[in-house]
Image 1 (cartoon, helix red, strand yellow):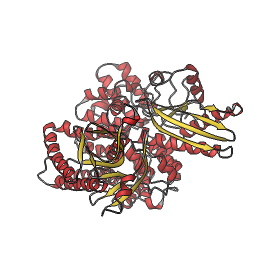
Image 2 (cartoon, helix red, strand yellow; image 1 turned 60 degrees about the vertical axis):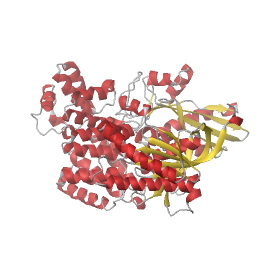
Image 3 (cartoon, one colour; image 1 turned 90 degrees about the horizontal axis):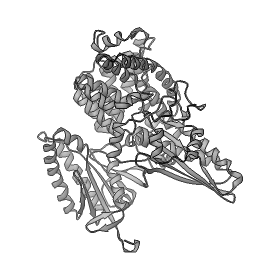
Image 4 (spheres, one colour; image 1 turned 120 degrees about the vertical axis):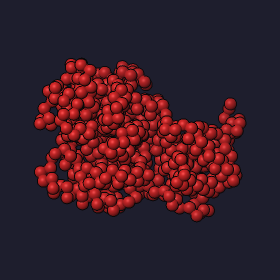
Length: 640
């Protein structure tokens, strides 16, 4: 069909989706279907009442068009208000929550269906929405802002694959004001944020084959040598595609188009990109020698993933015309072959270095959010900092802290001293949350010189953090710290994690909630929320969520599930030591002493804390079957 014959128009599109629909189906399919049917009937009646038309539906989603942006907004907010009230009813058998998004844009009419970016962005906005919330595009906001009673919260520029759009939350009594951008305060940072709503095949792949990074800044060569930036504590690089727990990045040599006398610029830009990306410890960056080797070999596309375990490829050009130039960069996700980020900048000879640094920082922020941390959590965190550099400092602190060993503690402690100097005063809760986690780890790793003084400091930090009631982080902090050190009972701790999940339910919150469910004996719930966390995070960097899930499977008597979860990833060079301790026990139990010894040796080399391992697996006595097994293999607990 030619472009001229396409039936195009501008339409207001409303997209809806059920939060956690698959989880509901797994728990009780019949109840889920009955509940959704009842809730959908309310939605369809409201769409008709406000003059809308349903043009597409899925198992748990509806797409509708409206002739008026105001009517679409009133329909959406009315529906969410009714759903919140329905979920509050004591006789409600299932608490079903929805996300809604509204966009106004160009669409193509094909029969009764609508297609095109106008529909796609509505779907992106729906995924960006909070549970029970409504997110709208700027085109809708500008149309309705002066015509309705509603107030709006600016989320700034969002970028999803090929779509970029400015988004707003509709403020309602039952929703929280998220830590979003104000759209003008931090333009460089907000331009880097992306809101990706791809749940399906790619997440299934991530769940089955966790990819990750080694601790420490890394630029690794696939020919067996390490570049200068490689951490001395990093495992040796391998030529095979061993899966790591964070993404592996290849920066292809940047091509120069135009003037032959400036061809050296391409190598300079390539090296600059590698140096910038290697500042984030959550990714593995391949060296420039590997980049040129791959370029010469002609290997491309999925063959890079198959041959070398590469997850993302950065490529680009430098174009010259007279004294002016342009840098074009793009990031390709090899999981689905799509361009997940792209940008370009014009420059002069005087501005080249500034422009290439700016583009490198934008690329780094996109990688950190979309490939490592997870979109919603990453975007919210990013808005707590004024610059990308400050945000990277925070992510590096988090990455080191999550190693949960002595080396990670001391590395994160050093980063925290820099971090507290750059946290904006309007986000002061972070000034207590982050130091509290640092002191918590200091105590749990047995590094306290004066434990009583540290406990007193920890209690004060938690109390100060808890003064902020609209963030999820203080609730999960007070639940875990209170349970372990200050006599908080399970019902109180669970109440706190429930509030934290309602306020956002980020990956870290879900992981913390799983820990509380686990120590309170609800292993099935701990498994459930751990799985949710794994689905939401692109890569389980450091295997931190995975190692907890292994413990919950064991505690719930589902040891067969451990093998299905880990599979060949047990051979990952950076596999978490707690998982290796467990596999040493499991191998010894079935009589494979050679493998058992291998796993034990690797766990020791990882510097894993035996105290944390016993805490994760709720081991309260050295007579426990796991400890007896490890001791038969020669484990000396006093050396940990």
